Length: 481
Image (cartoon, rainbow, N blue to C red; front, side, top):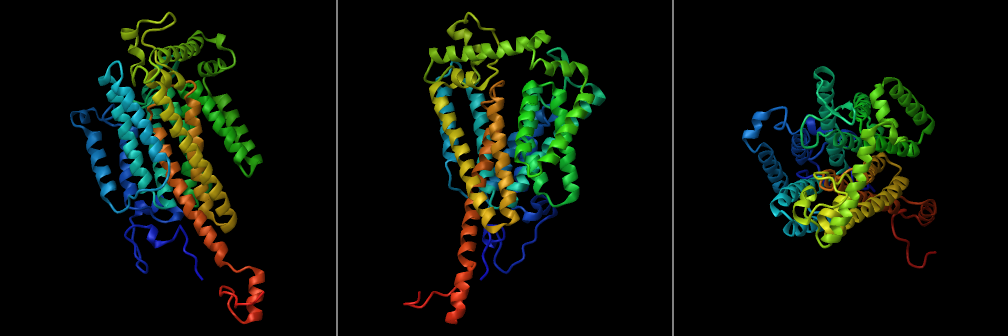
């Protein structure tokens, strides 16, 4: 008796009927790879993902600023996804936790020192969460999740290539902390530290796609993208980015099934980096061990300490909802200047930003969101390990790689929150969408594995059926042992 798989069940693909061959475009087939074509909503989501990441109106095509380019693209894409047959509501705690975090931001905005200033940040965060909701509901099959991950990696690779070209050929960068540093191609997320962080966050997806990709040419492309990402992190001069990259590399080495090959690859990469990195950048990274080597590095560390202290002081002044989103730098205008405060200094760490700007409501909302994401990841990993062990098939293993990549990136986001203020960044909700959809697919995989174990006859049942002259799947007659 055939078992319907969560990979091939035609009911899982919108618009497909049993016995009817579904034709898909080359792009949807390319994105899905060995898991089959993605559904029709994924290319639309990939379009807005590229527009959001590259942001051409900020630097590449300034004439687009004359029109609300991003809003138009967002409205078209979201209307297509939510109205189409591909999107569906899923079970899970992540959407409700994200809604609770947004509600906490709204409370903090209503009680902010300058509600108008806070509303600009809160509304942008809500738009990011809405797009993540579209991603979460549009991922119907493992191919859809793989396709969106591939698009994220691909858009970031194009972004990095353009930034490296401008840096090498036109000298586009910024002189900060005593060195010339690589920057992004736009202004919103183009800061060296932010650029390095969002580059490191796609590295787990790069590795997961490379491990599970069956097309050789695409494996080479992914390997080249990984090398390019390492070069980007190094040239930004971001110490937090280097720490995140090292943490991810160690985790990847520990999870590798062929650790000796991974050790050789890491050793070769480290040797190349030591030879290739310019001396000023080497000195910048050496300040991780000895901050006194560079005065600017010591000032950077001191700024993070001051940001944490100021966040705690603002929390004690306004414990319920803080000073409001994006009001950290103007709090002295309303609450007076603190004795240790540096006017205009950003929080430079997630705890100080969270406590100072959103207070207790923000702390509870954000903690609930993180707990929902990490708990969902743990349950999905457990189900996928059981499914892969039972079915011994590639689909569950490929899905497990992507789910683990999303979980690893979420942990990296928390790590980057130690030296950086990343409370309102889009990555939180995008990774939450991957984890929530992956958990639902893991539940489907577990159900499929359970049906397989039930339908595959065991050896004692086969022998009993032969003695009784019946089928191995037929029930035993009454009174039989």
